[in-house]
Amino acid sequence: MESMTRPWLHLEHATSSTNAFAGLVSIGQNISRLRPFEPSLVDQLRPNLGDWRDPITFAEKPLINPLSRLELYRERGVDPTLTEFTVAAFHEGTSIAGLEARENDEHTDASNETVDDGDEFVRAERAFAQLRRFEVAVRNFIVEVMEGAFGAHWMKRQLPKDMRDKWADKRQAEIDAGREPRSLIEYADFSDYRMIIERSDNWKTAFKFVFRRPEDIRESFQRLNPVRIATMHSRIVTLDDELLLMVETTRVLKAIRSKSS
Image 1 (cartoon, rainbow, N blue to C red):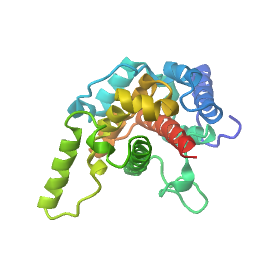
Image 2: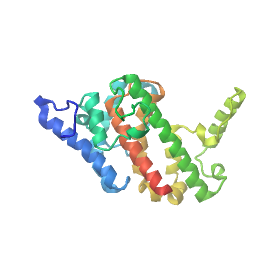
Image 3: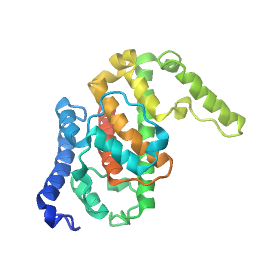
Image 4: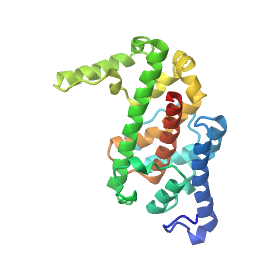
């Protein structure tokens, strides 16, 4: 707390502010010291970030609205006190907690200070870039692990029903439009990654040893889904969005890097 330079304590709610700051630091420390999908960590995060274990069907259009996302977060059990700070204080707090990797952030100056965390456009761009890096890493990881487990032609046998055909249709549409085609997995939807990982034979052979329990990696992707909907439609990114984005991309990428190393 002494290292904070931005005003952050609500004097009329001092206990709540202190508990919220302690909560952010606790989340960051636990992610740093524990394995990312250690059951004890997963269970510790749930009272703060809500319970997202059961499969959820996301209605994309309503979730473009930040108020609808906020309502969803409260329904799932996301702790509202964790983001009851000014934007500047929230980002300084999450940075102290180790939840923000500023060294790769294009919106920083030479001294590694945030250019303008209060600018909605800057924050939305940063969230978009963070999600893009995350998706590229997840796709590369899936390809690496699946090729190692099932061989170079794994897409023909190990994808959920009709998924490969949908990717191929998207790829053909790009070719027909005169655009350079990409590798097939780059046409995957965000929800496809989870479906590939959760498929029973894929899980047992390739992913169980990385993510421990299928409901836990499902929970991570489902926490990220509303944030992705907002960024893909260039909408306002809230502090609740950012908190879920920071925590879950950090955890999943840590698990992926641990496996790769």
